[in-house]
Image (cartoon, rainbow, N blue to C red; front, side, top):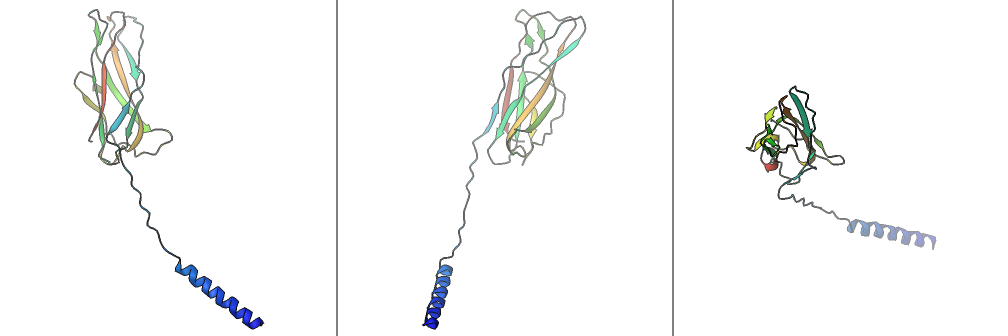
Length: 176
């Protein structure tokens, strides 16, 4: 009886093992990642500068933290362009639009990105024609970035006191 019971337990174990092996299989998961249609540019609040005239030529600076998102997933690169009007006080007095002296960029905190490889040289004199001031070469610049241009505005010693304003137009466009 014991031999018969052991034989039945053995047969059951072999059958169970065979059944387990017969149920094995493989899966081939796939992942579809879709990119967005374009590059986005988020602008901060309007920058401002202040200066006190003392009869000497001076320089006042402003900078703006720009948010750039390239979620297209193509690696085709992008450019940032800028155009600016002269500063005007509305009473016939003006100051030059300024000189873009440099740009810093970094991955947005808490995000992964492919660092942008920039080939633009500085300084750049701002004017009314859109000019490339930062770019991301092919296969770089994917993800979320903080890009900060720095602009110096010359204030001559013979400037008129007043409140001056300029219109700065920024754009993010495809291409290295």
